[in-house]
Amino acid sequence: MRQIVLDTETTGLEPSQGHKIIEIGCVELVNRKLTGRHYHQYIKPNRDIDEEAIGVHGITNDFLHDKPIFAEIVTDFLAFIGDSQLVIHNAPFDIGFIDHELKLLNHPMGSVTTNCKVLDTLQLARNKHPGQKNNLDALCKRYMVDNSQRDLHGALLDAEILADVYLLMTGGQTKLALGSGPNGGEDGDDRDLIIRLPADRKRTKVLRATEEELVLHKAKLDVVDKASSDGCFWYTVDNYQ
Image 1 (cartoon, one colour):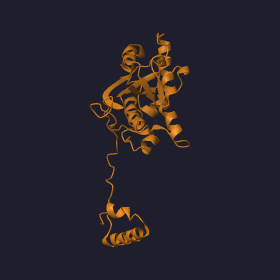
Image 2: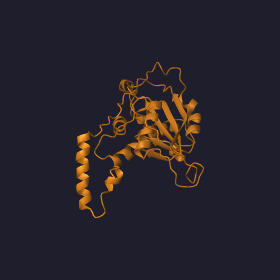
Image 3: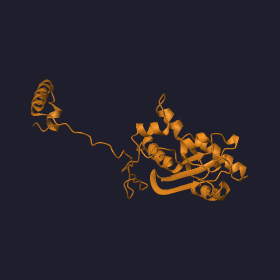
Image 4: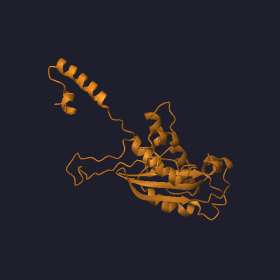
């Protein structure tokens, strides 16, 4: 299964008002494994960027003046996503902008959903965590994904972070050994858990029982052992017998 985790940055909020895509970032997952392949492109919109949008992503008109327009990158972009499932946070926003760009070009595809299915991680998060904040920053905190480099929104960085959040939100990447394949599964599945933890995360402190606490624990087990017809299971576990 091939999935593309995708994010865009734009000149504003509404394509119906002439706003355009200025950055696309994608990372590839195959069988829920990050492959290291990605697609990243800045795009000249041929229109001014709203000041509010610049405050969100930090991309300026001057920065984009020598970048290609969407028509020049559309073939490579569509070739990268192919017919994969697109994983997007607040998918209607990004899909709306991509489809608007395709419409402006009279592109034969018409809509990106012609070839691709779409999974909206915002809707997925709302179903799993009703009544809670489910923006990307909130999900990073909830699933302990490091977003310390995310001072501003950026399409590629946000796609990388979203990939980690999505994998954790849907059960992570786990090693399976259920079949007879070369890596344990019937289809050779061998999936590794990838979790981004904050760089300053402190090591968990281990507090060991004192001698007095061990004596009290043993006395409690004696009571359980006498009251049980089968004996105390925890004697064996704690190596008391």
